[in-house]
Image 1 (cartoon, rainbow, N blue to C red):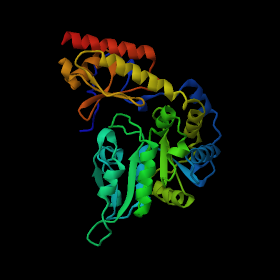
Image 2: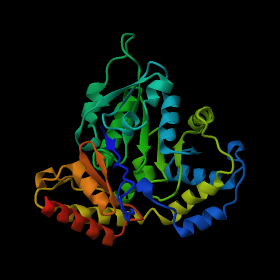
Image 3: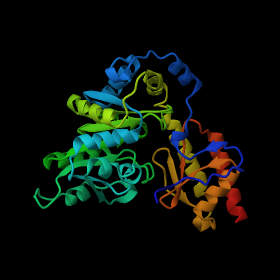
Length: 355
Protein backbone atom coordinates (compact mmCIF):
# COMPACT_ATOMS: atom_id res chain seq x y z
CA UNK A 1 0.00 0.00 0.00
CA UNK A 2 1.60 3.25 -1.13
CA UNK A 3 -0.78 5.73 0.48
CA UNK A 4 -3.20 5.48 3.37
CA UNK A 5 -5.36 8.52 4.11
CA UNK A 6 -5.88 9.26 7.79
CA UNK A 7 -9.04 7.80 9.32
CA UNK A 8 -12.00 10.14 9.22
CA UNK A 9 -13.10 10.80 12.77
CA UNK A 10 -16.23 12.96 12.99
CA UNK A 11 -15.21 13.88 16.54
CA UNK A 12 -11.71 15.00 15.58
CA UNK A 13 -10.82 18.60 16.38
CA UNK A 14 -10.72 21.14 13.55
CA UNK A 15 -7.76 20.73 11.21
CA UNK A 16 -5.26 23.52 11.87
CA UNK A 17 -2.03 22.24 10.31
CA UNK A 18 -2.46 20.39 7.02
CA UNK A 19 0.70 18.50 6.09
CA UNK A 20 -1.21 15.78 4.27
CA UNK A 21 -0.24 17.00 0.79
CA UNK A 22 0.51 20.11 -1.22
CA UNK A 23 -2.76 19.34 -3.03
CA UNK A 24 -4.45 20.69 0.10
CA UNK A 25 -3.52 24.29 -0.72
CA UNK A 26 -6.29 26.85 -1.02
CA UNK A 27 -6.25 29.67 -3.60
CA UNK A 28 -4.96 32.88 -2.06
CA UNK A 29 -7.23 35.95 -2.05
CA UNK A 30 -5.12 37.49 -4.82
CA UNK A 31 -5.39 34.32 -6.90
CA UNK A 32 -9.16 34.29 -6.40
CA UNK A 33 -9.29 37.90 -7.56
CA UNK A 34 -7.33 37.02 -10.70
CA UNK A 35 -9.69 34.11 -11.38
CA UNK A 36 -12.77 36.26 -10.89
CA UNK A 37 -11.51 38.80 -13.40
CA UNK A 38 -10.31 36.30 -16.01
CA UNK A 39 -11.14 36.83 -19.67
CA UNK A 40 -12.80 33.62 -20.88
CA UNK A 41 -14.11 31.88 -23.98
CA UNK A 42 -14.77 28.35 -25.20
CA UNK A 43 -11.62 26.35 -24.38
CA UNK A 44 -12.73 23.42 -26.50
CA UNK A 45 -12.77 25.50 -29.69
CA UNK A 46 -9.55 27.33 -28.83
CA UNK A 47 -11.32 30.58 -27.98
CA UNK A 48 -10.40 31.01 -24.32
CA UNK A 49 -7.62 33.63 -24.23
CA UNK A 50 -6.56 32.86 -20.67
CA UNK A 51 -6.17 29.14 -21.38
CA UNK A 52 -4.25 29.97 -24.55
CA UNK A 53 -1.95 32.29 -22.60
CA UNK A 54 -1.30 29.62 -19.98
CA UNK A 55 -0.49 26.97 -22.59
CA UNK A 56 1.85 29.31 -24.47
CA UNK A 57 3.69 30.18 -21.28
CA UNK A 58 4.11 26.55 -20.20
CA UNK A 59 5.28 25.51 -23.67
CA UNK A 60 7.94 28.23 -23.52
CA UNK A 61 8.82 27.35 -19.92
CA UNK A 62 9.42 23.70 -20.83
CA UNK A 63 11.03 24.41 -24.20
CA UNK A 64 8.32 22.68 -26.25
CA UNK A 65 6.33 23.61 -29.37
CA UNK A 66 2.87 23.42 -27.86
CA UNK A 67 0.90 22.61 -24.72
CA UNK A 68 -2.60 21.71 -23.58
CA UNK A 69 -4.48 22.49 -20.36
CA UNK A 70 -5.81 19.42 -18.54
CA UNK A 71 -8.14 19.07 -15.54
CA UNK A 72 -5.55 16.97 -13.65
CA UNK A 73 -2.00 15.72 -13.69
CA UNK A 74 -3.27 12.15 -13.89
CA UNK A 75 -4.99 13.00 -17.16
CA UNK A 76 -1.71 14.47 -18.41
CA UNK A 77 0.02 11.14 -17.78
CA UNK A 78 -2.85 9.04 -19.12
CA UNK A 79 -3.30 11.03 -22.33
CA UNK A 80 0.44 11.24 -22.97
CA UNK A 81 1.00 7.51 -22.59
CA UNK A 82 -2.07 6.70 -24.69
CA UNK A 83 -0.62 8.78 -27.51
CA UNK A 84 2.88 7.38 -27.18
CA UNK A 85 2.00 3.68 -26.76
CA UNK A 86 -0.08 1.10 -28.61
CA UNK A 87 -1.75 -2.06 -27.32
CA UNK A 88 0.82 -4.66 -26.39
CA UNK A 89 3.62 -2.09 -26.01
CA UNK A 90 5.89 -1.87 -22.98
CA UNK A 91 6.56 1.24 -20.90
CA UNK A 92 9.47 1.42 -18.44
CA UNK A 93 9.24 3.38 -15.18
CA UNK A 94 10.34 3.21 -11.56
CA UNK A 95 8.37 0.72 -9.47
CA UNK A 96 6.94 3.51 -7.28
CA UNK A 97 6.00 5.83 -10.15
CA UNK A 98 2.64 7.60 -10.01
CA UNK A 99 1.55 5.98 -13.29
CA UNK A 100 1.86 2.60 -11.56
CA UNK A 101 0.68 3.32 -8.03
CA UNK A 102 -1.92 6.08 -8.27
CA UNK A 103 -3.72 6.04 -11.63
CA UNK A 104 -6.06 3.08 -11.28
CA UNK A 105 -4.31 0.92 -13.86
CA UNK A 106 -5.29 3.31 -16.67
CA UNK A 107 -2.39 2.12 -18.81
CA UNK A 108 -3.85 -1.40 -18.86
CA UNK A 109 -7.56 -0.52 -18.77
CA UNK A 110 -7.45 2.10 -21.51
CA UNK A 111 -4.23 1.49 -23.41
CA UNK A 112 -3.66 -2.25 -23.20
CA UNK A 113 0.05 -1.81 -22.64
CA UNK A 114 2.24 -2.98 -19.79
CA UNK A 115 4.73 -1.28 -17.49
CA UNK A 116 8.07 -2.80 -16.59
CA UNK A 117 8.91 -1.69 -13.08
CA UNK A 118 12.52 -0.64 -12.60
CA UNK A 119 14.10 -0.75 -9.16
CA UNK A 120 16.30 1.90 -7.63
CA UNK A 121 16.90 3.88 -4.46
CA UNK A 122 14.86 6.96 -3.55
CA UNK A 123 12.29 6.54 -6.30
CA UNK A 124 14.83 6.65 -9.12
CA UNK A 125 16.37 4.07 -11.41
CA UNK A 126 19.88 4.53 -12.76
CA UNK A 127 20.74 4.82 -16.45
CA UNK A 128 22.51 1.48 -16.06
CA UNK A 129 19.34 -0.16 -14.72
CA UNK A 130 17.39 1.28 -17.64
CA UNK A 131 19.95 0.03 -20.15
CA UNK A 132 19.94 -3.45 -18.60
CA UNK A 133 16.13 -3.65 -18.91
CA UNK A 134 16.20 -3.12 -22.67
CA UNK A 135 15.97 -6.14 -24.95
CA UNK A 136 16.51 -6.68 -28.67
CA UNK A 137 13.42 -6.11 -30.77
CA UNK A 138 11.77 -9.45 -31.43
CA UNK A 139 8.34 -10.79 -32.30
CA UNK A 140 8.52 -12.76 -29.04
CA UNK A 141 8.81 -9.62 -26.90
CA UNK A 142 6.56 -6.59 -26.43
CA UNK A 143 7.75 -3.48 -28.22
CA UNK A 144 9.53 -1.23 -25.72
CA UNK A 145 8.11 2.15 -26.64
CA UNK A 146 8.42 4.60 -23.77
CA UNK A 147 10.48 5.41 -20.69
CA UNK A 148 9.04 7.68 -18.00
CA UNK A 149 10.52 9.48 -15.00
CA UNK A 150 8.81 11.36 -12.16
CA UNK A 151 10.38 14.69 -11.22
CA UNK A 152 10.46 14.95 -8.24
CA UNK A 153 10.16 11.32 -7.12
CA UNK A 154 7.27 11.37 -4.65
CA UNK A 155 7.55 7.98 -2.93
CA UNK A 156 11.33 8.33 -3.08
CA UNK A 157 11.08 11.28 -0.70
CA UNK A 158 10.65 14.18 -3.08
CA UNK A 159 14.10 13.45 -4.49
CA UNK A 160 15.44 15.30 -7.51
CA UNK A 161 16.60 13.49 -10.63
CA UNK A 162 20.03 14.86 -11.50
CA UNK A 163 20.32 16.58 -14.86
CA UNK A 164 23.18 14.26 -15.87
CA UNK A 165 21.04 11.17 -15.21
CA UNK A 166 18.10 12.62 -17.16
CA UNK A 167 20.36 13.41 -20.11
CA UNK A 168 21.88 9.93 -20.09
CA UNK A 169 18.47 8.27 -19.99
CA UNK A 170 17.43 10.37 -23.00
CA UNK A 171 20.59 9.34 -24.87
CA UNK A 172 20.00 5.64 -24.15
CA UNK A 173 16.32 5.91 -25.09
CA UNK A 174 16.96 7.62 -28.40
CA UNK A 175 19.71 5.15 -29.30
CA UNK A 176 17.20 2.34 -28.81
CA UNK A 177 14.19 3.93 -30.46
CA UNK A 178 12.23 4.78 -27.29
CA UNK A 179 10.12 7.87 -26.60
CA UNK A 180 10.71 9.83 -23.38
CA UNK A 181 8.06 11.21 -20.99
CA UNK A 182 8.54 13.27 -17.83
CA UNK A 183 5.86 13.29 -15.13
CA UNK A 184 6.72 16.76 -13.87
CA UNK A 185 4.10 17.07 -11.15
CA UNK A 186 6.66 18.76 -8.88
CA UNK A 187 9.15 19.70 -11.58
CA UNK A 188 9.25 23.34 -10.48
CA UNK A 189 10.21 22.24 -6.96
CA UNK A 190 13.23 20.62 -8.58
CA UNK A 191 14.10 23.69 -10.64
CA UNK A 192 13.84 26.03 -7.65
CA UNK A 193 15.94 23.70 -5.47
CA UNK A 194 18.68 23.26 -8.10
CA UNK A 195 18.60 26.54 -9.97
CA UNK A 196 18.37 24.60 -13.26
CA UNK A 197 15.79 26.17 -15.61
CA UNK A 198 12.78 24.01 -16.40
CA UNK A 199 13.53 23.92 -20.14
CA UNK A 200 17.02 22.60 -19.38
CA UNK A 201 15.57 19.93 -17.09
CA UNK A 202 13.15 18.79 -19.81
CA UNK A 203 15.61 19.04 -22.70
CA UNK A 204 15.38 15.94 -24.88
CA UNK A 205 12.16 14.71 -23.26
CA UNK A 206 9.44 14.24 -25.85
CA UNK A 207 6.66 15.17 -23.44
CA UNK A 208 6.53 16.79 -20.02
CA UNK A 209 3.96 18.42 -17.80
CA UNK A 210 3.63 20.44 -14.62
CA UNK A 211 0.91 20.35 -11.99
CA UNK A 212 -0.64 23.58 -10.74
CA UNK A 213 -2.76 22.12 -7.93
CA UNK A 214 0.20 21.12 -5.72
CA UNK A 215 2.86 23.55 -4.49
CA UNK A 216 1.84 26.22 -6.99
CA UNK A 217 -1.44 26.55 -5.11
CA UNK A 218 -4.01 26.66 -7.90
CA UNK A 219 -7.29 24.83 -7.31
CA UNK A 220 -7.13 22.61 -10.40
CA UNK A 221 -5.16 21.75 -13.50
CA UNK A 222 -2.00 20.55 -15.17
CA UNK A 223 -0.42 21.52 -18.48
CA UNK A 224 1.15 18.94 -20.80
CA UNK A 225 3.70 20.04 -23.40
CA UNK A 226 5.44 18.50 -26.40
CA UNK A 227 5.58 18.79 -30.17
CA UNK A 228 2.65 20.35 -32.03
CA UNK A 229 1.81 16.98 -33.62
CA UNK A 230 1.88 15.26 -30.22
CA UNK A 231 -0.42 17.86 -28.65
CA UNK A 232 -2.87 17.46 -31.56
CA UNK A 233 -3.12 13.76 -30.70
CA UNK A 234 -3.38 14.51 -26.98
CA UNK A 235 -6.42 16.68 -27.76
CA UNK A 236 -8.12 13.66 -29.29
CA UNK A 237 -7.62 11.73 -26.04
CA UNK A 238 -8.61 14.75 -23.98
CA UNK A 239 -11.92 14.74 -25.84
CA UNK A 240 -12.35 10.99 -25.40
CA UNK A 241 -11.62 11.16 -21.69
CA UNK A 242 -14.06 14.01 -21.10
CA UNK A 243 -11.33 16.51 -20.32
CA UNK A 244 -12.35 19.18 -22.82
CA UNK A 245 -13.81 22.20 -21.07
CA UNK A 246 -15.65 25.42 -21.83
CA UNK A 247 -14.89 28.68 -20.00
CA UNK A 248 -11.82 27.16 -18.38
CA UNK A 249 -10.03 30.51 -18.26
CA UNK A 250 -11.48 30.99 -14.79
CA UNK A 251 -9.30 28.19 -13.43
CA UNK A 252 -6.45 28.78 -15.91
CA UNK A 253 -6.15 32.29 -14.50
CA UNK A 254 -5.22 30.77 -11.15
CA UNK A 255 -2.43 28.85 -12.90
CA UNK A 256 -1.16 31.98 -14.66
CA UNK A 257 -1.17 33.78 -11.32
CA UNK A 258 0.81 30.90 -9.81
CA UNK A 259 3.48 31.18 -12.52
CA UNK A 260 3.85 34.87 -11.71
CA UNK A 261 3.77 34.67 -7.91
CA UNK A 262 4.17 31.13 -6.53
CA UNK A 263 7.23 29.64 -8.19
CA UNK A 264 10.15 31.28 -6.39
CA UNK A 265 8.34 30.97 -3.07
CA UNK A 266 8.62 27.17 -3.34
CA UNK A 267 11.99 27.76 -1.66
CA UNK A 268 10.06 28.64 1.52
CA UNK A 269 8.42 25.21 1.45
CA UNK A 270 11.82 23.57 1.06
CA UNK A 271 13.16 25.55 4.03
CA UNK A 272 10.18 24.50 6.16
CA UNK A 273 10.72 20.85 5.14
CA UNK A 274 14.38 21.04 6.22
CA UNK A 275 13.36 22.62 9.53
CA UNK A 276 10.81 19.87 10.14
CA UNK A 277 13.36 17.17 9.32
CA UNK A 278 15.94 18.72 11.68
CA UNK A 279 13.46 18.92 14.52
CA UNK A 280 12.21 15.37 14.08
CA UNK A 281 15.74 13.99 13.81
CA UNK A 282 16.53 15.44 17.23
CA UNK A 283 13.84 13.25 18.81
CA UNK A 284 15.38 9.98 19.94
CA UNK A 285 14.19 6.97 17.96
CA UNK A 286 12.77 8.85 14.96
CA UNK A 287 14.43 8.10 11.62
CA UNK A 288 14.11 10.88 9.05
CA UNK A 289 15.02 10.96 5.38
CA UNK A 290 16.81 14.21 4.59
CA UNK A 291 14.48 16.19 2.31
CA UNK A 292 15.58 17.60 -1.03
CA UNK A 293 12.37 19.54 -1.67
CA UNK A 294 9.05 19.81 0.19
CA UNK A 295 8.44 16.20 1.26
CA UNK A 296 9.58 14.80 4.61
CA UNK A 297 9.41 11.04 5.21
CA UNK A 298 10.02 9.64 8.69
CA UNK A 299 9.47 6.57 10.86
CA UNK A 300 8.73 6.93 14.58
CA UNK A 301 8.73 3.19 15.36
CA UNK A 302 12.13 3.39 17.08
CA UNK A 303 10.60 5.86 19.52
CA UNK A 304 7.96 3.32 20.50
CA UNK A 305 5.15 4.83 18.41
CA UNK A 306 3.96 2.98 15.28
CA UNK A 307 3.43 5.24 12.31
CA UNK A 308 -0.34 4.84 12.14
CA UNK A 309 -0.63 5.67 15.85
CA UNK A 310 1.52 8.78 15.39
CA UNK A 311 -0.69 9.93 12.53
CA UNK A 312 -3.83 9.32 14.61
CA UNK A 313 -2.41 11.12 17.67
CA UNK A 314 -1.36 14.12 15.60
CA UNK A 315 -4.83 14.31 14.07
CA UNK A 316 -6.27 14.54 17.58
CA UNK A 317 -4.17 17.67 17.93
CA UNK A 318 -5.38 19.16 14.65
CA UNK A 319 -2.42 18.06 12.49
CA UNK A 320 -2.91 15.93 9.35
CA UNK A 321 -0.20 13.74 7.77
CA UNK A 322 -0.23 10.63 5.58
CA UNK A 323 1.03 7.08 5.86
CA UNK A 324 2.82 6.23 2.62
CA UNK A 325 4.78 3.09 1.79
CA UNK A 326 5.16 2.22 5.49
CA UNK A 327 6.41 5.67 6.47
CA UNK A 328 4.83 8.95 7.50
CA UNK A 329 4.89 11.68 4.88
CA UNK A 330 4.66 15.36 5.73
CA UNK A 331 4.28 17.78 2.85
CA UNK A 332 5.00 21.50 3.20
CA UNK A 333 3.25 24.08 1.01
CA UNK A 334 2.12 27.69 0.89
CA UNK A 335 -0.51 27.19 3.62
CA UNK A 336 2.11 25.90 6.09
CA UNK A 337 4.12 28.41 8.12
CA UNK A 338 7.37 28.10 10.04
CA UNK A 339 5.37 28.44 13.27
CA UNK A 340 3.22 25.46 12.26
CA UNK A 341 6.38 23.41 11.70
CA UNK A 342 7.62 24.17 15.22
CA UNK A 343 4.20 23.36 16.66
CA UNK A 344 4.15 20.01 14.84
CA UNK A 345 7.62 19.11 16.13
CA UNK A 346 6.42 19.91 19.64
CA UNK A 347 3.42 17.63 19.27
CA UNK A 348 5.58 14.76 17.99
CA UNK A 349 7.93 15.20 20.96
CA UNK A 350 4.93 15.18 23.31
CA UNK A 351 3.53 11.97 21.77
CA UNK A 352 6.91 10.24 22.02
CA UNK A 353 7.31 11.26 25.66
CA UNK A 354 3.86 9.89 26.46
CA UNK A 355 4.81 6.58 24.83
